Image (cartoon, rainbow, N blue to C red; front, top):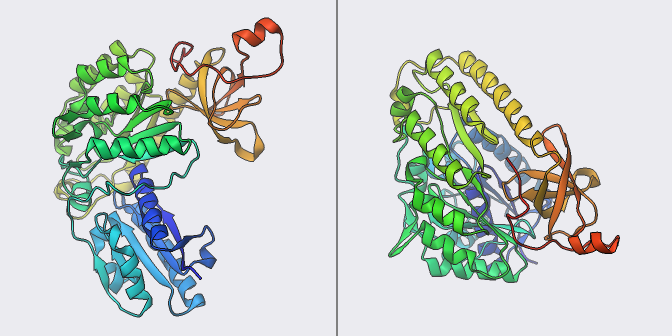
Length: 458
């Protein structure tokens, strides 16, 4: 009987993609995936170390894994993978009871390490950083419609608060040929949308191919209807990229540009490499080339030495830009980063209160941005059944999740009119095609797959 494995994933889209890589590696070695933790012989955790809260959640789940191992007895293996494994290394064996600890560049060794641990070998730690990009491994997508494709790994920016360069290593890009081959295979499996991933995807370079060149190749792949990418460093956004997006209708008009702070003083302390004015110039550039584009961002509150004036500057930028969505976090000290030596530290209560104010502002803006869609026609990619059978979950080209009413198939690209906003979520009704309207027919058909002609989002 095949050994069964369960994997719990924490953190970003990169981690979700790496969990898919792990599944492929283990299934190719004869292991069987299970969604039932109680049935698993191998309990794995894909972890994140970007914030302390993520580590604490993972450590809490690790305790549940240990209890499961006690119930199942000998032969059960507990593995910690990813960023926390790279960061804490042997401590996870010595203090937390992990059987194997495997960093982001060592997943290919998992089958042998699991077998050794099951045989009773202790203290198995594999955390050497290499140039690994997993070019030849096709992760199994979690969705039948959308897939994540890592095009580069690592980071060279060394923002003072960020542990990523220390746990993911230096930037290295995959060969374009391997990326295109992966996406062609995904398209053959029915995938309609791909998101190209990298810690700083705009820094992609492989020999003579840069990121705009890669986008052009991906956009030519038959069967792929939409292309997205994450994450972009504002410093690397330029007119050449925006011209490329303007020319490629398959590339969605949705940009994630982390702001982090609206204060020049804090941005310098963070080593972000741009000023508030330069960031706003990038926003103006986006809106000049892509007026219908949606903008999302990351913001860090309570960074060491952040004053009330610094925080007010952040609120002012948020109010001015009016992001469609934002990931907002309270600063979390990460041992080994430069920021832990910056003083004074902002008291937790003050940082928490600032975060609440920021969330309230952004939530209001997000709701208002979504309400601007009411009465407008949008093009939606149907992703899945909606919550509790309430319609279908679909997504606009600008990355807004919409609940769709009216018959449609998962994976279909349809036209719809937004009728209301419920909470923060737009609700849309599917439209008939022009031919159906003329014939008075009730049967719905797929909308044409030209992504932008009917898109009127703000």
